[in-house]
Image 1 (cartoon, rainbow, N blue to C red):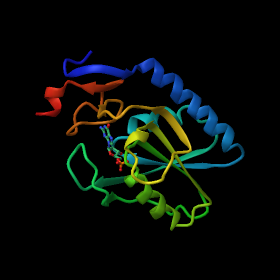
Image 2 (spheres, rainbow, N blue to C red; image 1 turned 30 degrees about the vertical axis):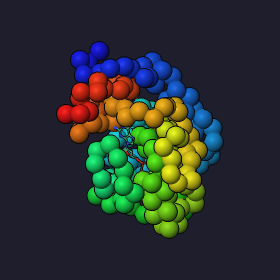
Image 3 (cartoon, rainbow, N blue to C red; image 1 turned 60 degrees about the horizontal axis):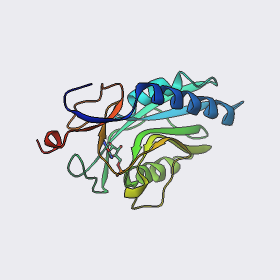
Image 4 (cartoon, rainbow, N blue to C red; image 1 turned 135 degrees about the vertical axis):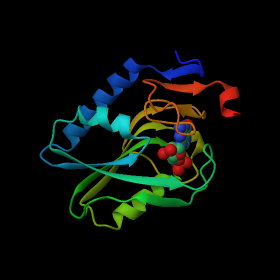
Length: 179
Ligand code: 5GP
């Protein structure tokens, strides 16, 4: 285990099994259709890479990068697009792939923004859900795990850009968050 980690919340095996199930469920639900997976950089990249390899229907990718104003552990609600999609999503079946839904503010913004571009359908798939922290009424159609109100890192999620490459989801030691 990494020396900065206090506890592992989700192991590599747990994540692998659940991601496989999600991919199978998505493949069933979108049977006969093509899906455009929109990955939200950078946090969702590792989840997306594993998820799409478990999807058996025709799958296309695009990416967006957004930043919420505020400190690294608190989202303020204002969202800025750092990188927009490369192509139009009009008439397409779009699946947003996110790392975590916390307050829900980022996702609410993304859903409104992408819905205004005329997709045929728009659904959300998130690896993690922290429902205790929700301030807006938004829910993902596909959820990997519901977790308690703790700041987590690993499997794509960072703290000050570090720890994204940990193969598990973990909580860091308090002294690390305090800097
Ligand atoms: P929301 O807008 O739902 O409050 O926050 C969404 C974004 O905040 C996520 O995409 C993620 O970048 C960040 N975030 C929220 N909770 C956590 C967490 O526990 N760990 C990490 N690393 N990022 C988080």
